[in-house]
Image 1 (cartoon, rainbow over the protein chains, first blue to last red):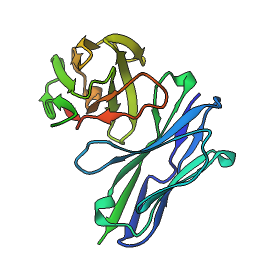
Image 2 (image 1 turned 135 degrees about the vertical axis):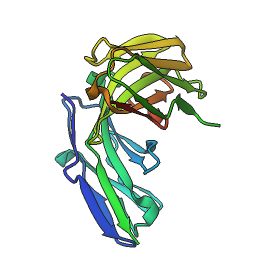
Image 3 (image 1 turned 90 degrees about the vertical axis):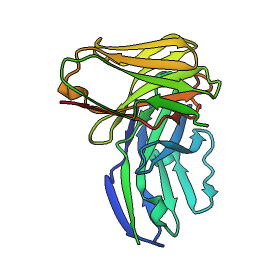
Image 4 (image 1 turned 60 degrees about the horizontal axis):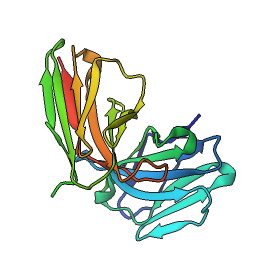
Length: 115
Length: 114
């Protein structure tokens, strides 16, 4: 069965600090996809990144970077030099073939960036 | 021009009432979904439709009935509302019904049952 664990429910950092949001997943499939979504205070969820299970290359997009490690079933998300606009709830999610596009979301990590 | 739009944004109603939430996407996507987000922010899929056909029904009480008149619309009707139905309901769409598809979400409907 699919499972996504985000152990950090809330994190507070001071602006310009780096912060890493953890995500650990469980799946029986060898082919699966991992996602991160951002939910700002306005409420709408926004897609950030998608990674397939065969691509373990880390990815960087501006201040955002993602570290995918199959050996530890983790897909962590790091924000460098955090800004107040990064304050949001961040969801890690998993979709595998057995799930038939039933995306399983983690509980979310609420990030507060303090000016 | 909003990609996935749902109305209303807020819905406050009494227990026992029937209400509907509407959702429309203008992205030309084949697949649409309803997700429920509870007070602890947990997101769980309720339904998915692919080209107007129901694909996923996640053990949701039959008081909840989705209807897809065409592939651009997926409405959610809820009968005999209960206190526990209070949540934020999100409509979403994806281009196809594939494992790797990213989801496009509406802005949510906050339902409060009194």
